[in-house]
Length: 230
Length: 103
Image 1 (tube, rainbow over the protein chains, first blue to last red):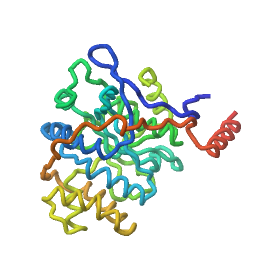
Image 2: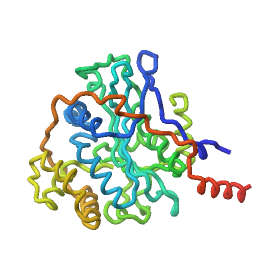
Image 3: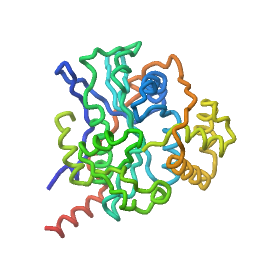
């Protein structure tokens, strides 16, 4: 029996770095100060990069809207911030944000439920190297932030009776590179000719070959792969 | 994932008659006004956001960033809880029954 399906799974608590020494991470529920700091310091740097799919995002709008709309539609919205803890100075450095819907029809099981990643973003290195009141050095920048942030969604799914099932829509701006990255993480792609499960999205934003999802088995495997960082 | 920011500006202008070139007014409408609207209207707006997401082009967004925001505090960012069990008691019993049937 796989205990991961029965007991709560801990979030990742450290990330590898260039120095070889892991850096301590902290996964917190997303709060307004996290988002405000992100929009003042990280987003301006992202906005300068034409290749980023999250260019011109505004978390100050997404978070209240996701919480409200997700709540009205009983989608159980939740946001997480992945950050570095600086315990001595009582500071928390957000390195990634993820906004989820905790209750979404599963893409691979007609009756099952899944988590759905609505927004996910990781800080570029430059943003972490230029923090005025707490600059990090290059060899202390956390690596694998994308994988770790996706794992936060999978962990939420595992801990909320969704068996790890997690879905998302790969932004078209990310092109094939983004789609392939999700596939490398173990996600499957819903073929363009396969319909979404019954939900407003089926009509409004139908399947076009960019919806990705973790099956239960793939989610468990992906989760196990990060156990050394929990 | 995800919805472009200009979609939110367009929606605020359409449903709230807000100046779509005023990021602060758009933010105020989403955080303060929208929650006061009836659930049916919120659902309509939600669907409009998704629909616009599908159809709008890549339009420029007026950028505005808050200045001088300090790093969040660690004490104000408690760790997300890890539940002891991955499901409620009823769900666990159902899973156990399922396992027994399989066995």
